[in-house]
Image (tube, rainbow, N blue to C red; front, top):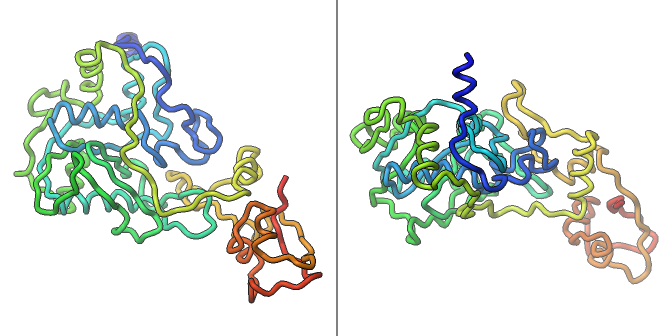
Length: 334
């Protein structure tokens, strides 16, 4: 036991700065209580894992998921236990060949993790039937994920080495052994496509955790700095609203909670939606009495809204026809 503790605390390098400044997207705290920043945007933690995988497999592209939503590396000594924190499982590394068409299908499989976006949403949410460790993020390519489109049609503008993904081209993909099994089950690759297996070559030294340590020591000289290339992003959604910060503040104060799956294993399974919060009486509204010369566009502008947003809040029959003395609902801004 003492030897295990000593091994976990073995310093293998130095972390020059925190990798993720705000692990929780809304609260900014290390503990994830709302939604993880790491599944809403590219981060240096996932980029490190993919960088290591691509290096040892000499792959074109790589995929990895976060097994711990709060995965982070903090400035200071880099210890073996830090690797276990960002990479929870003893997976090994596989390199496989895959067609461009099947790589796209794999990416779409991953992107189904997001629920459909709808007007009024100020956050993205996650499919309660999909575990977070099944949301893979890719390196070695640039791409966009559009949750306003149906699952299966969301991944857009894919470029590998600056060139569009070609269906019939063969690409070298780096991934862990568990996900390789997933792709076998989806019939996107075959065993004959596998060109590298770290366990066959290195046994326990071929576990991805060990390979991260080796990479940092041999290739980085023990110095680990956070780098993120922002090679992917969310598109097709408008999450902005003048009421966004009001709503986020309610979450921070515990006045509003974000639903989790029934079994508690998936966070953030329903988006925060301005219109729904108003309809449910959770988000307070005030009233405005229409004055002579007013129009919906001008009134909306006073509250930082578009006329379409204000029209939706009020469910007006004719947005072009509002009369002096008419009362309309407006946000109760602080």
